[in-house]
Image (cartoon, rainbow, N blue to C red):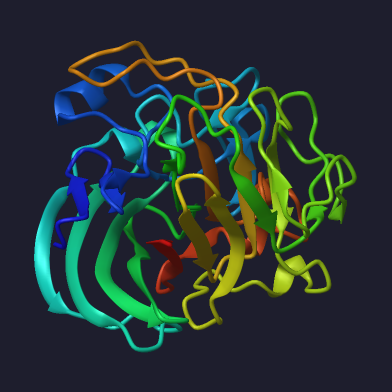
Length: 342
């Protein structure tokens, strides 16, 4: 892979993404330190179901059956349970040659690696055996005269046995820090939408999409040392019926979800995806000690953009088809990071 970008078999983790000499993703120098200290899920591929499942249960799949999981976030299941895909050892990285990234024009390079994992029937309580693959493609493009580093991520999952239906929602949990300092303070951010899902105390949507009013998200705003705090699921296109979202979004166009830059470091980041939603999180609960030569990381030392399906979609009738994977179908999604220094 390009010198700027590296990965680990544990969780198919994005370990480094260097821009202008600065690694803009939070992490650790060794895989062992991720295994022992990565409570925030730095860089991890999250599954079988990213974000939260209400009351740690899903209902009415596989002929009306219900399934219960560990409650590891209050009453809910978070990020696939105690040992979700972000804590499993994947096979890879396996080089698979040069690939283009659909929706990214003029990509130079395209070196691609594959990570794969077999999630057993009953893994963390989930039904069915699922084979999942993550493809990482790196390269560069020239945009407005600037050399832009590109990291493409493609997810591919298939139910191969043990059940006729299961539930899948995959994302990457990288924490970005464009400042090079201990906090995200001074980072200017703009979201593509102000539509979001109002949440309960424990992060479960209480209604359909509505307007976010705490901050004017679609115009640039600055993240401070204390706020504003986000841990919210934003909806990319609220005019689109949630039930119309295919279980494989890869054929849909890439949409820019978030733009961010740090005026002093002059580093820019864009996150694009084919997904219908994204969690925007400003890292309030990060609490990692200094280990292995890496500094301590505390509250607001990174922010996340997690493209995904609607939170808890499987338990909402009009949303559930987004993450209900049936035998013979493919789950798919695409995420792209673009970054450059002025």
